[in-house]
Image 1 (cartoon, rainbow, N blue to C red):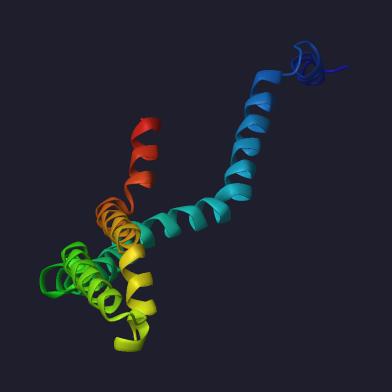
Image 2 (cartoon, rainbow, N blue to C red):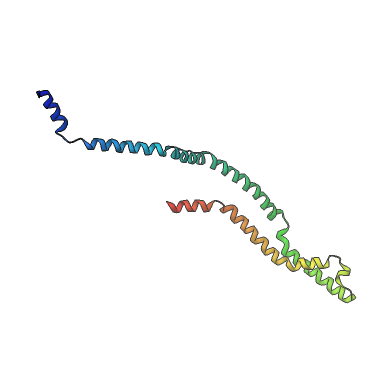
Length: 162
């Protein structure tokens, strides 16, 4: 064998193959494959978060503000300009009038319904007025709580994660 052949064969077969290089190349190809495989989903997640953070949540906040303004006007009108807040006082006044009617009807020996057509209905309304007023106040408080606390649940859950 010539010296050149001996040198070539010695170089080819005398040392073990460089496995580090091939493992590194496999690792790099594996990472690239993972990146390519997950890119579409990551892009979807990223774009959705971007859309929500920079567009849609602002639109939702505007919609909430508009809706709350409309509701606030309605609630304010009901409480400030409405007459429901006077239910207890009006029921007491009607009860006094009904008592006078009943006393007068008794003195005359007639049924109060004969003197006042809506006697039974008014009596029923007066008897349930206190309960209705309590329900009215509780529902008003619930509306106020909900309108001021609407999205707080989501925000409190996010703060707990941090």
